[in-house]
Length: 130
Image (cartoon, rainbow, N blue to C red; front, top):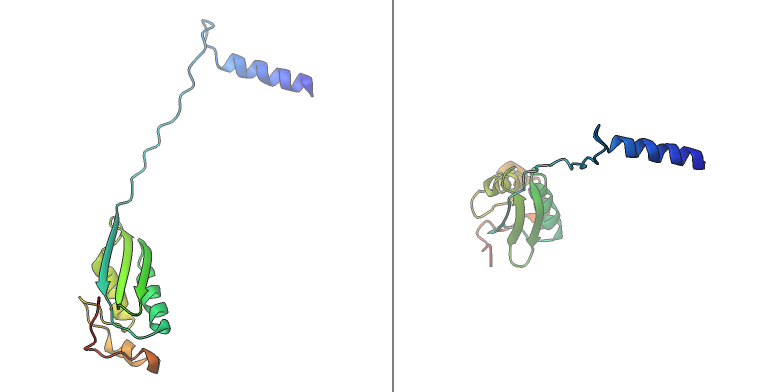
């Protein structure tokens, strides 16, 4: 076992020296990564209950680039953070509307609204973002 370690150490030492016997500097590869641009927004979404909360948050989270989506049942308010290089707030508004819920920018899809459970049938005139 000691001989194997000694041989490995000698090979490693030889690999780090050049022909003149000088020790070569080990270089670290440079890794360039594009930093995500996180954007946080808040906007109104109509809904009534915990089932609405699940559906609204799931619709928002289904958009690629969304990091967090939290809808407040009482305030009718969505707090959202997303990678601005992958999506926009409008894409999230559209996804929520497609699931049947009105946002303060896009009206909910009426066909999807009709399939919501009774407890989720919100008043289309209710105040949002309170």
